[in-house]
Length: 349
Image 1 (tube, rainbow, N blue to C red):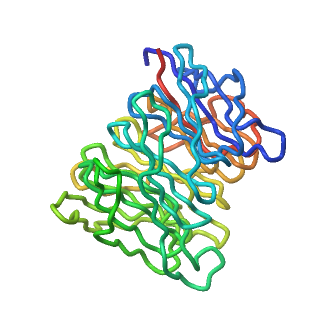
Image 2 (image 1 turned 90 degrees about the horizontal axis):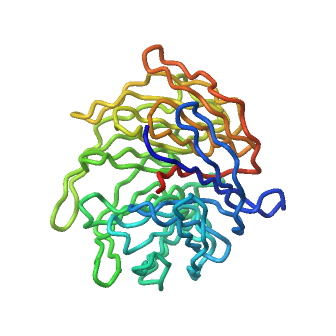
């Protein structure tokens, strides 16, 4: 792969062992990260990069913090914005880089903020608290918004809530930055829909369930009032029946979108699926250990040949992906990092 790449890893900083974001140079050919520096952010639980790759946004105790990605890959803090709620757990931006969406796990709130032309975070344009009850289970009895993303047609905002086992669909008013609910996709009781990703052609999305440990595959077609969605497959996140301690964590597509990866805490594994781009359906190729504990995120290298397991237990482990044999082969020694939560690999310059 030509070009220079950086990796940005968000960590909790309350223990004083990490500053918030760790910056790494990426050796794409060897499949490893090389430490550069740390940047202060209070408890960086999730990161996202603007679609033009010029800005990095982080969840923080004060709300959302924006950074400009400099030509050499370093970060320059721009501003922060309060979300008028409890701290978020996931963020995403609109395709036009004019809005950012914050998912609130603790208070069940989705918050919409405008992004200014210079990439800084502007004012809140809307905020909705989810209501309802799940089951009597410990983590599944009240709203916990876990993932918010715009649909590829840019008409709707889809919001996963693992507390009430639903994905709410909101119509998005781009001019005003306001949302209005138009539909609900219901998951099974106590399944806990955590994260989802869309294929770039907009025809399918993949919904990961934290408690049921399955991925639901949905077809997607746009509509005037509501989108047309249909479940086409349900497949386990582990090769065998998961034990009670397993919790599916993260879901990522390979750069060519021919493969999908997910990570599992408790089981401490990464699974890879071959993806049929015509039908959207998945075929499990392997489920293998990641030499760490609690793989909260996974990062696929831009060449599609390596992955990094972001292990919340205290390290990042690196692997070469052998697609033919269905194996993960460690490509470099693990690096220690305090309670990492999320990773973004970005092309710079």
